[in-house]
Image (tube, rainbow, N blue to C red):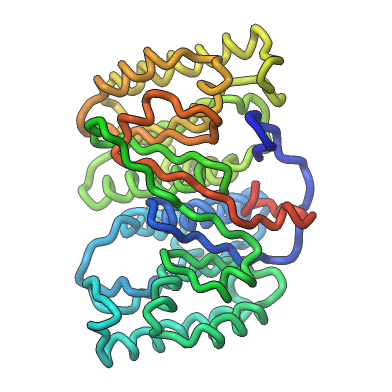
Amino acid sequence: MTQAGIGIRTAQETSGRATGQIHVYDGAGKGKSQAALGVVLRSIGYGINSNRQTRVLLLRFLKGPGRTYDEDAAIAALQQGFPHLIDQVRTGRAEFFSAEEITRFDKQEAQRGWAVAKGAISSGLYSVVVLDELNPLLDLGLLPVDEVVRTLKKKPQGLEIIATGRGAPPSLLKIADLHSEMRPHHHDSPAVKGIEVYTGEGKGKSTSALGRALQAIGKGISQDKSHRVLILQWLKGGSGYTEDGAISALQKSYPDLVDHQRSGRDAIVWRGQQQAIDYVEAERGWEIAKTAIASGLYKTIILDELNPTVDLELLPQGPIVNALLRKPRDTQVIITGRCKNAPDYFELASVHSEMVCHKHYAERGVDLKRGVDY
């Protein structure tokens, strides 16, 4: 977990809350559906490691068959890796449309998907229900907002619900326990294809990166290729961190495709209190990253918490910019972490999403939940 300011701490070893929360990811930036899939992977990983079955429903509105979406490959990787834990339902037509172009079919598909959602929520069968693109569905007026809000408020106690998509209505945001807005940033300088940055104070940065790892693996499977993934973490030298269960689950299902390296002390690193070992560990991690980026061996490289590492001045920016400028064309580099001072390499990103925290249940004293929050 991340404390206020710059610094990472190990998640406390606790059983966590029993009450499920309502998560809303909205905004015009990229990362909403990816963050939901990252939470799914984390929940599954915790279930496997704790011998508790975690069953997930991915209900995807406005994403009917006949069109390929960014998260299709990631979901395919989830279903192949965990075939008895993931259910998926898609509704809607396979094209974009405005409120003026709504047809009777659109209304019927929305109602069909919502009927599935209500049944899943009340069944007690699932521990996580993802309502992907529910927000724009409500914004288009294809479902009655009041009914949706009433249903979500009456969900079973332990059920986590994740609603995604831009245009979340105020009444849904009012009952949400967590609300992260993905805000896009555009830069004047020419972007380098395949560099994505996820930053900000809100939830969803590392989870979005995990969603991208799933996507890379899934694309490789669909093309009968081995798309290898490297997850490299800074400031996380101990154990009990947010992504541990998710990474463990990935490595168990795809042992030849996922490599994981971490660096840093098992302690918070605060500005002005850096120790010599912090610089040594940061540089060690960067040597691995630099070699991996240049090698072309990996399809996707996740540089988790690189941003606060640079913000703490544990690493210089120049070598990072040079390595990114020279990366192989087909290598995707995903960079995460909050920072107060935007580093120069942000200007290279073809995707730059800032996760803005509007609401988080931890601020109300709600205990965090293993497999979802850490």
